[in-house]
Structures are given as structure tokens and as C-alpha cells.
Length: 305
Image 1 (tube, rainbow, N blue to C red):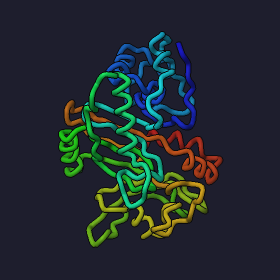
Image 2 (tube, rainbow, N blue to C red):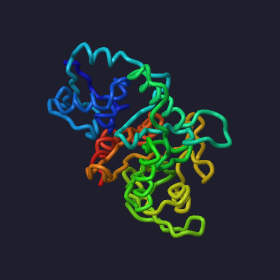
Image 3 (cartoon, one colour):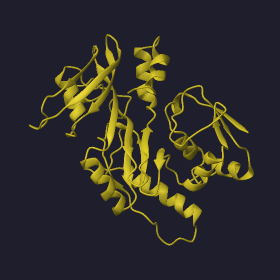
Image 4 (cartoon, one colour):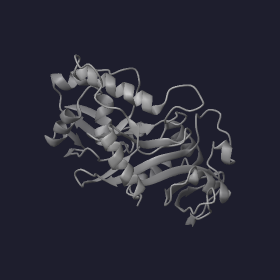
């Protein structure tokens, strides 16, 4: 067996996403078979695709010639972090500073990078295929400076199905933010955004003299809602200069991360919960603010309601 010890960068990463990062040329069907047959275990037990890993977990992977070849495989040049994938959608951990789609600024977009990656993987599996068999369409969007889980549909059909899911409120999202100042306890913010009724509920996970770690659940979907609501209560997101946040020159975005996405699979009826690991820059700032509580805070992320 091949043995791996989960480190900080993979904390909260789904087992399926962890496999996809290490075996980018593997098909989804092959990875599912590895899990179903118990060829991957976590702490000695069989694991499901959506199980989030934790720092210190021991992962064992069956050793074979095919697995070794896939571990050595490379697909394209982009390190796209796929968290979950089925025949309708692909969920990706978006880095801060990357646009979802073409904007006024030049440069790559998440949709373009993901499409190039998936096309390269398809060509690797089917070298004689003439054209890619899908076109990616964003189901939900994140601001350029926000990191975390985002969903792209792989077809017009998938976009329609998941578009209805979003409109009906069936996509539940939990965000984490490092906000300026000391925020106590929990609460809700109902300040209108762009003149429209808006509601964000929040729970404080850590509160220090200079910054707080907050879990936020937007009950409505207004543009920049969380960013504007935190500014309204006097605790803007760090790095979010547009809404009063302290500049973070070494970080490409701001300290807002789409940490958890939950929905009911429209095809199977299964409950799906996708965790997106926090960026290293976010973790570094949190560690500097709460060195004594850091390990406990990370451990508690997996038990957030």
C-alpha cells in the first residue's frame, strides 16, 4: 500500500478531490471503483468520495502498476483543483484573484482554465476524439477576490437543471471570512443591498483584537452581499479595499472563502456536501492571529452546523 499523511493544504479536501489532484488522468469511473472496492482507506477504514480529510489523517492507496502510472500522469499545465464531478457538473476550488469569466481585465478566467484542463484530460483518455464533448457554464459565481467552491455545468442541460436549483434556494453555501476587529458571538445582518431586502447570518469562530474568523450564511443572494454587510457592522473583510478592508499587498484577493456547498443531487436525490480547502494565505493570516487556538479552530471547521 502507498501511505500518505494529510497535511494542512489538504485539510477539509474531499477524498474524491484528493484523488483527482494526484491522478489527474484517471476517469471518474475508475476513481469511483477504487473507492467502492476499498482500494483507498482513511485511518484504516473505507472512505466515500465526499468525506472531507483532516490534518493528520492517514490515507492508504492500493499499489499497482496502473495506479502508479496514473500518479505519475500529467494533464495540461493548469493545476485546477476539482472537488467534485459527475456527468452534470464539476465543482472547483477557485483561487483568490482569478475571474470567473471574461471581464474588463485581461488574463485567464476560471471557466477557460477549467475547460482547457478537462479537454486535455478527455484527449488523454480518447486521443482520437475530434472535439470536446462539453462546454462549461457557471452555475454560481464568486467575485474575483473571493476564493472557494464554485460549480460549473458541463452542458446546457446541466446548466438548466442547476439554474433552477439555485433559483429555488436549493444551493446552500457557508462562507468563512477574516474580518477586521473583534466580533463577538453570533447574529444576523439585514441591511438592504442596492435597495433590496437582504439577510446574512453569522457565527464568530474566533475573535481577536485585530481580526475575527466568521462563518457566514447568506440567506439572500445580492451582489457583494457578505462584503457589504460586514462593512455595515464596521468589520470589513480584510483585503477588501472596495468596502473598507485593510490592504493585503501579498495576497491576490481578500479573506472571503466559499467553504462549503450543499445541495440535493437532482438526478440521484443524494445529499451532496462539498468542502473547499482554505488558501495558504488565508491560513497563514489566521495562524498569525490565533497561534494558540489555530489547531483547534481548524479541527472545528469540519463540525460547523
